[in-house]
Image (tube, rainbow, N blue to C red; front, side):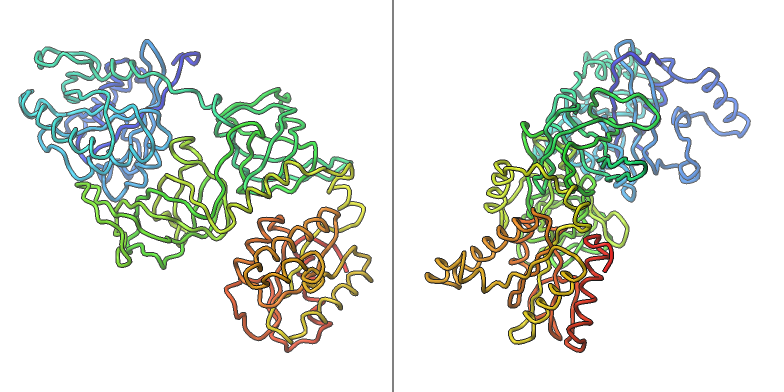
Length: 602
């Protein structure tokens, strides 16, 4: 294989036993892409075992596949034409392995969908067509294979073409070619053999070579899902290296980068690599490590982007198209883990818009009793526990794809069709603008951490009235102060009758969200100064906390509930049932801060 040639990834899909592997094997043989002696060796082995030779045996390398006579994984093979190199992905056709097919197809730029001329369009033919649409693959060829079994009959080919074209039009898919072939005899694969004089279109090989490469991912806006962050401390090395794989765009030192969903900004200082010369630029597909000019807090699951390019969407709500693989039906009361890029978040279905039977594309419109059955395709609105950054499939497909996990097993997957507003969308935009305009201190946060021997944090002590929240907060402040920590107790009453006095005079109830927002902005100032801020509030709710998590880095917030039972929907870090003394509770809160890395000893 000539490695300086252009390369294209192509996936072969189709119903089980429709001959994908045979067509691929024939393509490899007819283009002289097999290792020397491979074809002869398999022919000899078949003769010795008394079994007929099949071209599919050239790529059937997995033991499970040989035992079951079905492709159960996405096997990859390589071949080259005069124009380019190809990576061929042979995806499984059996319905039980459809998630393997999706995994293989997700890496492809083009797709070959194989249909048996004798059997015609089958259930999985339709499912796979829908999957290709869902994955955003535009370059599609439909092969009507095994034409030898129907006597190379033109009428059979045209009937299958008409039937499948009608189905594909219904889901918005327009294949580039319909090609009649015989994988066994080689007709229409790499050359015409005279058996189908009525067909004047391209061979499979010609169709592949006619595909134009898509715009390179390096020309797209930067997206780098953060895989991990590495901190060094030996011999004065205080670098914090952000690592991941660049899914699109290019990066180089000096680029202004922003991390979503936090919208924190910094400048890329250096590109880092292990045991190699430092690079001046990295492009899409490369593993990336870079240090930052300012040591901001970044964590796994965020997406790094360039400041001056199209940003991703950020929300807790999204309209998606998903394919359900779970044995049990999926309903709105089921909690799953959504994995998109490196982000992992709890997700629930907020509403089901329609459920589609991919075998015939019949649809049921959403209602409160609708559920998603095994192998159904559905359009739904998902709600996440926390906001994540993502793109829609029409903009950047790679960062629109997700999987749904339940009990450590992948139960489904899909693409994001639309970003939907949530309760703090407007506030999130305001905070992003604030972060852009924020005048940064010449004393960095990292320098404050090292000087103060602590990290900034917000401790929210909440619970019912008359339970001793203020007393505990005051004691915690005193203990942290005596431990040498920079801390402050800010009661919400101090804000209500101070900064928020104008709101209280008007309507305290209707303006509660604005109270919390302003409270959060005050807390942001304390945290930006490197302090540990302790606040108290009556019966904080999940929506109250969401406001604070939008205004302040959510990883800096710890919540404590004082009272026998949590009486709101708030998920808290620590609960006291009032059976412990104030001193014991203060020590446990300090231990919570220590475990979170905010303080290092007390």
